[in-house]
Amino acid sequence: MTGYPQRTLKALQTFLNTPLEELIGSQSINPERILALFQRVVQTVPAYQDFLQARDIDSTAIQTLKDFEALPLTTKDNYLQQFPLAHLCRQGKLETCDMIAVSSGSTGQPTFWPRFISDEYQIATRFEQIFADSFAADQKRTLAVVGFALGTWVGGMYTANCCRHLASKGYPLTVITPGNHKAEILRVVQTLGPMFEQVVLLGYPPFLKDVIDTGLAEGVPWPQYHIKWVVAGEVFSEAWRDLVGNRVGSTNPCFDSASLYGTADAGVLGNETPLSICIRRFLADHPDIAAELFGKSRLPTLVQYDPNSRYFEVAEAGTLLFSGDNGIPLIRYHINDRGGIIPYEQLLEFLQAHGFDAIASLQQQGTAPIRSLPFVYVFGRSHFTVSFFGANIYPENVTVGLEQPEICDWVTGKFVMQVQMDTDQNSHLVIYVELAPGETASSEREDEIAESMLQQLRRLNSEFANYVPAEYQIPQIHLLPHGDPTYFPVGVKHRYTRPLEP
Image (tube, rainbow, N blue to C red; front, side):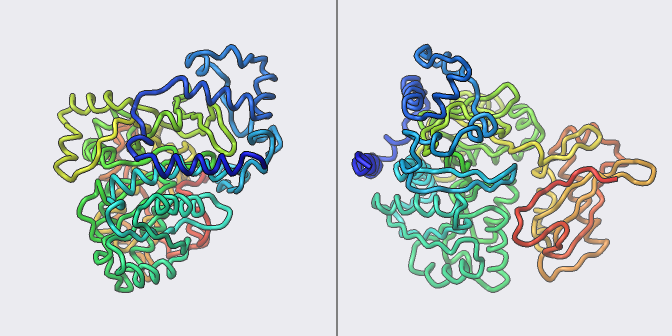
């Protein structure tokens, strides 16, 4: 394995010795770096060599960014599943990587993703950006509690490793890995939390909320631990951020939390910043402006990214693709997430034109470096929607109805949407809602949820307000016990939609 110690040492020294400001760079795209990545992949990855050869593409002809952006897209179907795993790696050797993660398999068969430790350092920079800019963890003794599932799945081990890299860089940061074991998280927070100036919880949004709610029921004094949180994997509303923040004693939503946009394919691609959160909160309060900006009646995840670490493009179908160096280097890889990219200055100018100075607003709330990085927004995958009278109804629209203060204490936040036909073949929007443990259903509660969801759907979704006849707009609500085996089975990845039923 000649050269591997040197490769590891060089990557580690670069990460440890380079200030965050230099690691992040700026919004300017360096075409030479992107072209160099392409040529490096052509020279070292047998699968990509074969991929180009099968399409009669001469790699030496790719000389400009325009040439690069004309290359065929790679996907799981046409690339990853067409070659042996080793051939997708550098030098065609699986042993060029030292760890393998597994994707969740939520859209198909699980996929294996090898990586080498040097691949983690550019991802650790995303964590450093959050821990330094949002949480001031370079100055405060911080306990990071990893609540993502451990084992082969990518989230837990990747997160733990990246947090340890920050500690190696000199951050007063200590990591503990209870994984997705709620009782253990509550135990370690109460035992170790008083020894630190702040505690950062990391996990999937519904799980962290469950941890926090269970802790409240058991008398955990969350505000004493100065809780921050990092989430990934789902789009959530600003009402959800406020709800969770209120329950842990958060006083500054732009600085107390952050969402990661990541994939098993390539780690973290982008992250929320205090600026992106400030902008998203404004857009949440102004759905008409958000719809003008994003072209949809739903609020996406909005993050900033480093274009020289992960180069994003938008495909014709309004879906995202990226290029980046990983254990399996990927060129113009189509991840099938619906979204888009917005240059930094363009977004600020758009907001100014609508009367909102994002930077001035943020500076009134706290001090953070303003990183002039571009933005990427992500709606997630379209199969999580239902179509009702031609209106696309998204989980993000519905969930806000459950997050209202008069409702949120007796539901978990999980629900399943369906469109069902009655005996006269009339369509109805039916929503099954999970009760919190120990709570009971009643027609009064179902009516209260239906009215709350109706208000939010009309406010947030212009298609719903204009396409759906008024007499069909109010949803039919069914409250189900916590852990209902049909709609809310325990230990299974939750799905917010079900196919049309007769």
